[in-house]
Length: 266
Image (cartoon, rainbow, N blue to C red; front, side, top):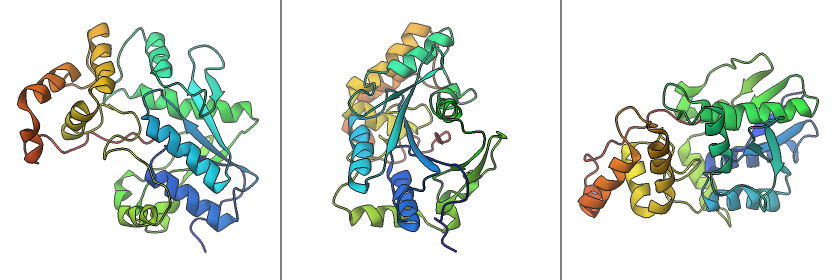
């Protein structure tokens, strides 16, 4: 049986805006002759995605003729809003609204309420508003990330892992995109929230070098709240370090920590 064949009933396909979830969406469309009538594709925008990510989501929708519902967190009821590529927030608005509801307390590795509120619950609220009571949640975890395969903790949905079931790895994903006429045009590590605190120190340092204007927001939020997103570093200090050391630190892969602190799975 084709591992990308859609399960019966309501199916959520959450598109993160990255290459892996884009590939997964393409394979599901191919296996089912398009988007099944009982399936919905959603993209949850936090306002911290790279412009190229937003363009990529729209291009997938246009080229593959698949409707994608764009959603954003709102602090007021019903706590979500349906937007589009043209109207999507590009200046942190959903993220800052979330921080306002938390008394400007910052999320961190132990309390990742940013993913929970701006992605998981925002999509859930939308689906419930559409009359969905239960559904299958399609998760873009590959076979080389099998340690991340976990059952749902919410009784409204069960998780489906077509990429892992198909034994697909990052090599399969990259080979696919090399054969396409378009691709995600961001530097490695820049996908999803640009300065996510779960990214490795090396990735965030590279972002400071290439996109200091975007990384400044994270430093500003720490200064504004008096807190930090990460227990052992601040964004301001990392940016200052990159500025002082110059390019040579990027020539030594052992100089900066390469290990992620976990991944945003929304």
